Length: 339
Length: 177
Image (cartoon, each protein chain N blue to C red):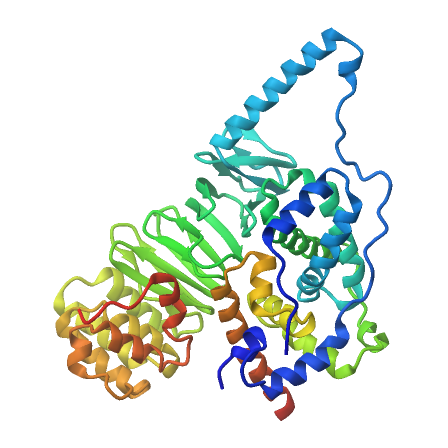
């Protein structure tokens, strides 16, 4: 059954949706608009002009200063920062309650301070202690931070790809979600997604990280392969060696075989990522193991996967029981043809 | 099934500008237009017994802050943000004061099954529960949700689809147990 009825009430009614509509309509509110108090604190125009030319001149000067200030602000967009604990700093200024983080400025917390950044109207970021973060862009279609070190928690309710965070080794692109991102002293980034999806991107390499999964990136190497948060230690350890440590062909094969041996059905999305990451000579091993865990759908062939046919890879992903590939292709454009 | 036609963003801009200048009837129109959205956003996040009062808080807060609204065409998303922030504040303050009474649900005259389904929705991921509450409780269509909240229609559609799928699974699991 299509979801047209769920979307706009057209098409064949879905009995379950209809039942829930009737049931839940009882929870609507019928309370009228609030009585508005007389004094709402709305700003009123000054009447000082009537009384004194001198005051008028002074007021005009103030207006000019304020106008200039607004012009400067317009040229340099900023986001509100609220201190949640201690006294975070924006640039060289400490903020005890709230302040504005302008494009190009750094927000820094020490060991006893935390802050919240309002990301325009699309979400917010909580900044943990000992964190250094910079506002790079605050445009309508590009909200971008740079996390140099420390930890941040993002909750974004905007359409996917409007918000991203640069780290020393990759860019975390929001696909509509909540997640935690941490950068350690060595510049290694850890991404933990708690709802929705995040894409971790470096040049030519992407990891799609679903809720309940983690991904690590390292400077000079880029995004590793995502894995579920409750994966076994042996599986994680082997994956780290494969992603970041082993360079020799023999060493890589040992690590890869350990990953494949430890993989369970829930790790299929990790193996799917590996298909396009491992070397050509290693790919058939991953194919065989993934085939056991989640059989390839009809039409997806060993030869096609060996040449990284994008449509075949997408079709196999759709068998994994996660969201289908249209979920991110929607934001990234149509799938390219065979490679 | 039919839904009320979505009103143009330019109407909201006009009303917001008028309200900003102190035109209270204009604000009343905005209230009637956006009350369901604010109610739904709050209902997805806070206990039902608190929602009606918080809805009024949000509108009064918005009226006081109207002069900070930079783009009147973005009134809906701006108001939605205030509602979400108000829900966050509610939880922060309730942690600082007292735990919610477990008796609230027992005292609620609404159908127990409706409250149970709402409770299930409130446990879904945030993006889904808000969209589902706006659709199933407030009776807003997908295009209407997108127009009011500022989300793209594609995003709302995906959230509805995924949220409904999850909700079905949770409800089936509940019945099975």
